[in-house]
Length: 317
Image (cartoon, rainbow, N blue to C red; front, side):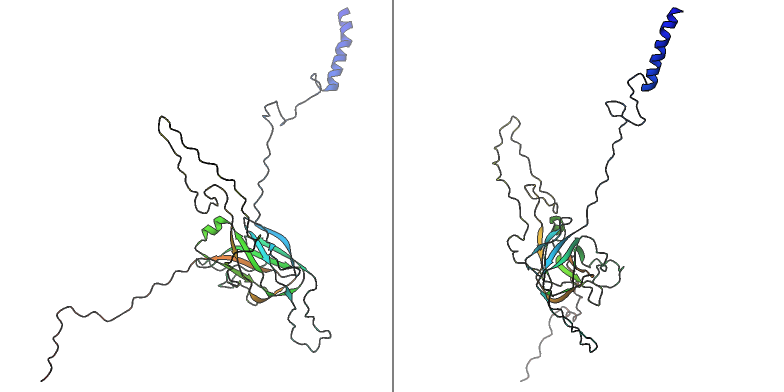
């Protein structure tokens, strides 16, 4: 009885401490689904979603203060430059006797910002790229041009140009190799025109050398180290053969990435009106060579029958 009276308060004190701390292990508990040990067996690894590759890019160019080439947005390996001509006075509309204020035909005094968007997909505010037909859902023609890059221009104010901009596109090496035998051209969709289709071949190719600094720069490569002479082995001298990369891979013989191919176009004298709310779209396309029609067999006289020729008549005395 004395033993029970002495230790009973001690047992109650220990039970109270356990109730306050939650357990006898220091008050730590393990939540469901949490780490169970150093091996992280129950830790859930969350994989972030893959970032989609952008199909368009935009920047802002200046029109009116310079005619030097300005950079095109870079998207999917495409790049290049665009040069705007000086704006000209807008053509005066037909005279209106009811008008109280004469229309202004002065060119903008200050520079105008132009939003430039490069995309490898068709713009939503332009018609379907099918210059042969105005139908939106036309059937695919194997001989139709293949669009490669769309360049949309959206000015912040109305401005009139007397020439089309000079556009040079850096085409990725694998795309250029795919269309090596095709003809590259530049098309234009002008919303001011009545026909809602792209106009093909609005500019001629510029095959001259580009100005310094406008073509893509190639990073300098270090001088190759001398090839060591193979040493003799008991099994003979073995040399590793080199397999060239496939065409269109973008890799050269040294394994470095080849620079893109520059496709430039000359300026064309034509009136182009840029509106503040109506984008103008240029399109770079590739046109496969058209097969020449086979000549139809010509129908000629039948060959003479084989045999000895008929004797010529003797002259009369």
